[in-house]
Image 1 (tube, helix red, strand yellow):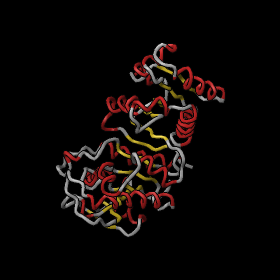
Image 2: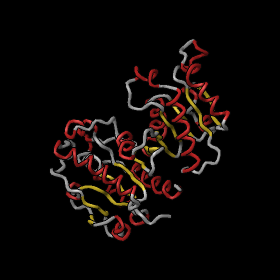
Image 3: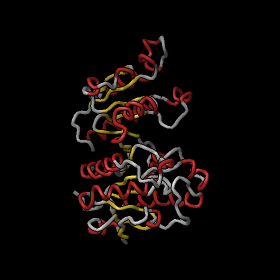
Image 4: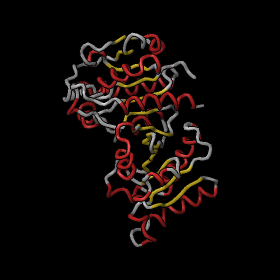
Length: 323
């Protein structure tokens, strides 16, 4: 197992990221070495902080406080009110964390939530979200977003799109690439020798043989048939409304859904506090808590660290398995 720590990016400093970083250190201490990349001045007053010069110092520092590799921001962080002057620095932190991970100084990347509107307005951030930006930084054409918890792993084929655009975006090439990346990650990183993947239909009742839509017949089923011929264990296309109860979940290792809410509603209903966002297909491990910046409760000490803790633990675990 690599001795390198996990890097946790600060995310939006006016959100709950700073207090979650402190709570994560309080829960994990030196048991799971990680360091925060961000501005120490943005952390809650009185937080036990140890500034470090290199990631290699994080393990030793974690016994005394939250290790922070400083990245100075131009403006203070006011809880609940993102500062436009800080937007570019948020983007820079993500890029710097990717570089540290790719060079091996960090074993994996865990990202605190960003505020996409604040980044777009303050830094001209043109990406739909973290996932797409990380793919661009890594030079990867296609990545897959998985939401994982102890109860369910689910992957949306299309992500940040208006619902009306999903049928046009749902192409055989996209579906096939998503299934291949998911299958590979389940085997290689999650250690599942023969992954079982359940695949949802797009339409109600998986199209009912064409009476409620033709995407299942024309797009989804042919891709599944072709990949089954290669040996993949794929079930579907299935009616999404019967895929996520306990007995159904016992029959697969991950579910692939056709659009964002079809995937995220089940996991956020079943296990909201422990859900983790995992980006599959990157040349490094990246996880993130499955929630937003929560500007409405920022700075109040009310943020639940469960998802951040799960994200850090999963990042370290997947990094230990990655070849």
